[in-house]
Image (cartoon, rainbow, N blue to C red; front, side, top):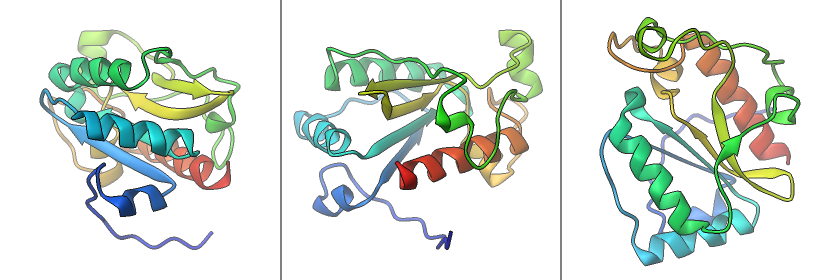
Length: 168
């Protein structure tokens, strides 16, 4: 698969946003989506796009905001754990366990598997969410106080999500 690395900041309300197969969102703080953004997100997901989000550093304010706003966008669906037999965990890499940062283990116990959740549409995830930080692991940026996944686990999960997004 040929890959071009290019960061492109796009707002939900931008028309060009609908041309991408995957949107990614992260953040530290509380946020509120406008009615226009909620409508655009629904349009994107219902057309087959995948919306991926993670709480940067595992911040609880982002986590609670994301959960609230997703309920607003998809009131008839809920974020649910992605089953471990889902193709998302079994494409480029076979993911059976995940390694977390020391701080995550200190406060959340000995987690052993990815804690990904999704809003599913006909068996396919339209929204994928990680309560724990993926981005620091992707950037291989150590952060002593982050609740997140270690680099290798974050990279493997991220790769599988991208492969799934462009092949399903």
